[in-house]
Each structure stands twice: as structure tokens, then as C-alpha cells.
Length: 140
Image (cartoon, rainbow, N blue to C red; front, side):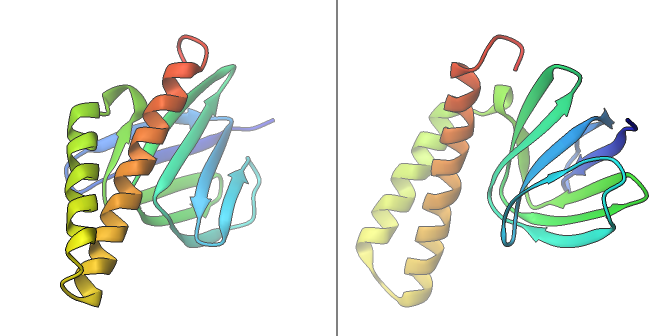
């Protein structure tokens, strides 16, 4: 079977770039798996975990949202923010979670409440990606 040429980039850096076997993405309509020879697709991605499979190794990456394009076995993700599971700063994620919970309790306006809820979802997903990586086999 062929390979996918995969790259995930943010405004600050290239988070991951390599030839891979499979990619699992939190798409706009749910989780989707992308394999070589997949039909072209362009979609938004939701906050969640990307799983990159190369050989027998899985790499987890937290993504806060963005856009995905797949064409001719080339997958490009333009992410709002992204970080590999092994690079997640747990103390920073916990602090963001606490701030979001505090803002949610203030209930100043519907807009502020929606922002606090979105921030809370992102911080919880970041922590979940970190925890999943910790409980997987070494090197995952």
C-alpha cells in the first residue's frame, strides 16, 4: 500500500511532516480515518486528537481546530494550534482549565459563556490527549 504525505502546520511552526500510513482526524462530522488513495476532501477539524500511524508507531497530536485538505495522497492541516502529546505542558493546561471554569461561572454574557465553554473543551481535550499517551505503550 502507498503512503500519505502529511503535514500539520500552525502560524508558528511545522508540528509534524512525514510520510505516514494512516491519519485519524476529529472532523466536523465526527472522527474519520484517512488512508492512501482516499478521495479528495476539504473539511474543518474540531478540537481533539489526531492519531498519526507510521508503521507500528502511533503519534498523538492535540489540535484545537483548523482546516484539512487531502488531494493526491497529500494531507495538509492548517491548525489554529497543535502540539504533540509528549510536548503538552500539563500545568499550563490545568491552569487554562481552571480559568475557563471560573469564567464560565461568572456568566457575564452569552458570548463570554460560549468562549469559556470553548476554552474549557480545548483544555479538557488537551489533558485527555496527554493522559491517553501516558497510558499507551512506550513510544506511542
